[in-house]
Length: 232
Image 1 (cartoon, rainbow, N blue to C red):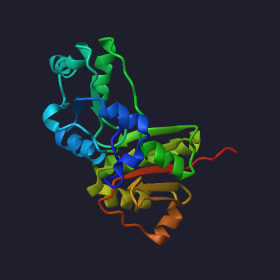
Image 2 (cartoon, one colour):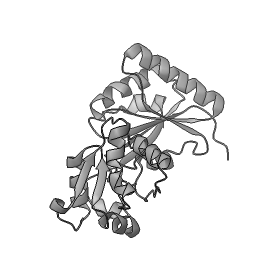
Image 3 (cartoon, rainbow, N blue to C red):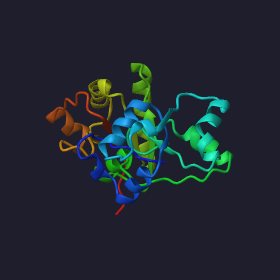
Image 4 (tube, helix red, strand yellow):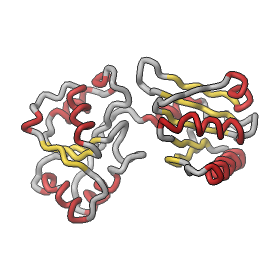
């Protein structure tokens, strides 16, 4: 399981040498999009010519297709699972092939690399002992507002950090909703462009966010909110 870069700049620097060495030893890969995977491999200095390499795409495969994707593993040849960004299987559809690999008795080896969720949580100053990741929140305004209020109440009652993501082109819309419907005392962290030179991780109360304002634009971001009490 091969994490991929969160930002294009200095891609190889985001990975320990052991991860690079293990990746460079492979010639069979499964990924969400072959083009993205090849671009990532090239960015980290992958030494093989792509004419020697097979990159298979994982869409929403049935059991027969999963068997095909795992064919090299079952022949005793190591296969790499590459995420679109960050770690495979976390906010990523790769979990379906990992589960099938477990079912078939194939050894799973997660490699070390950047995770936007953990980096955001680390930098947020929020509760790292108790947190929930919710993926994408509802798109419709009524459902979104309802969900946000539920997350805030749960955070207040259980001292839990709530984490979620959004498609970059909807960043500013969700920020507008958050600033309008969360309580002034609730903390909101916006972690954007993680690992890039212009990385930004900022935590403020909703009250302070309203005063300073924010236009995020189409930057990849993780959002965290916390309305509980941090324990020392």
